[in-house]
Image 1 (cartoon, helix red, strand yellow):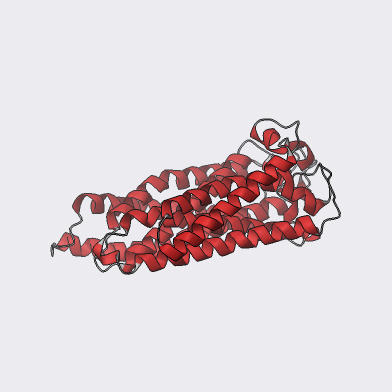
Image 2 (cartoon, helix red, strand yellow):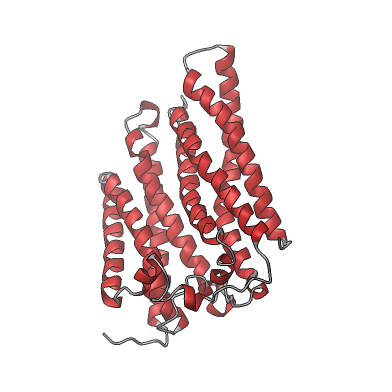
Length: 332
């Protein structure tokens, strides 16, 4: 294992989060089985006190979970000089079999953690804990993924050895690569751009409509999910090459470097925030008719929609600026 302050923070944070989730799940099972807001029993009072404590702790812990994705990427990128063949995080993550599964699971958990925080915020706005069972059910479903991430991340960091020869991003993100990556890289540029801008147009159209009329929340949420997937593909397929001014350089990690003004962090933060906020609208749609949320939930959803649209707009503006001011010019 390479001893690094960020690695220790990531491992310790994941372990602490896993332990807290296991503790929360114990009370989550009790809440799912025994919660009764109309009861004045000693058990009900205990559960009410516990759920307030757990919600507060989990808010901070899942906030760390959101930040840990960026800390993990930054740490992997900062370690690349230690490996022969690595030029950025792409090579570092390829140092053993656990690197890429870890970052994929971290992205999944980022979205899940964001949705739980949204649901918890909505629940706290209701006077009768209207979503208490639903948010603990989500927490129970979410826990195995966090435990899996803790295992994968630990296996990755504990298993990396500086003497390992790894691959550079030019090899990993090329048309000769294996699996989905090669398919994304090989996408024809004009159709890929058309799909990307069409998905963005759909997201903005449905988001503006929902914000104005309060209708079509599921459609807006679905469009955000599509934009999330399409944005990742577009970043690899054609957006990144304009920042590098190289038509063959498709790496999604090199844009995190100083020479590219750390623009990758702005891009990733933007479409992740836009996706979580937009998905949060869809997740909360079934609760609009709950009496204690009837007055407050529409306002929360409008704010989520505004945040999502502003985040995707930032992603679009940064991408367009990179394309417009790049020295790279492609024909056809």
